[in-house]
Image (cartoon, rainbow, N blue to C red; front, side):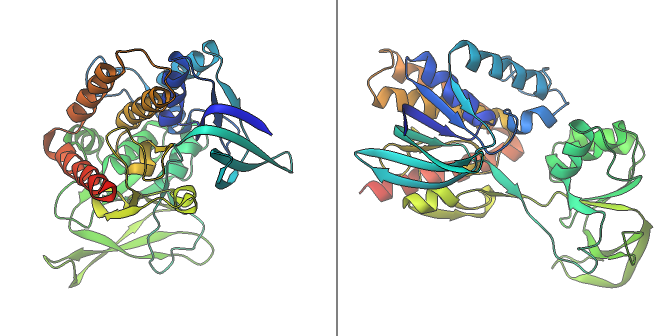
Length: 367
């Protein structure tokens, strides 16, 4: 059985940053991921990041991912890929993770574990929703930015959050026609700068609308949408049909929390963050001592925030092992300041309040 001081489950933005900070502090860090490549969502993100210099403003996501991978290699972080984790247990004073590799069951024993398992796309039920051509926006983004394949020629995007807006624009860049973007709320959910780019490209945005059904026998041929009233009920007679061969769903994310449930973590329900969230304190430590969580498993936010949470968890886990420098407290305060800056503004404020609620839950769980 392999042994390590700090094990990170998930090689996305949060996991890579957690491993880097832990290794910088002198800890033996180990990353495990079910995918064939590390980097997670970063290598699908061809757009430039926002924020400040510290948040890599002006740098494209895949370039940030490349930099993080180089750092992990330079720091000697060991990475296991193509290895799905299926179990997390307490064992001999530490914790053990069970996983599959090359068709064989294996295990790693760790003193501290950081869960950076990310989130999964939500689905949306509607007649015709199982036709070929209906997919998640993240799936479409993978097709165009990783596999260089257009998912379709005429696309309808459902959801106007940043994912829907950004992927819609990237589909336009890839050569597809985005026939319309549909949003059930009476307002656009993402940043105005992203919405403006789509509108300038000629794509209409229908707020207070939803998809009624996808039309077609063997694949999507068209989409019927309907206008909604103030109670989100269909307005009689307010329907229209739009020609399309693809429907992309950008209707939110749900944290991948299976391992946290298995470990026995306490949870709370926060809709703004995607649903059930493992309760954690200001060090990203869950209610299970020595088990930390970072990134979208703690609530879906931006990649920049996931990276900061990963850094915080890595620093805190190393500090708990007695390995960090005396400045650990100051470093964590700096990370928190950067995270709070990311959670300002009309959209970030909701996340700020939701995260504050999580910290209050952690205090209650500790009583």
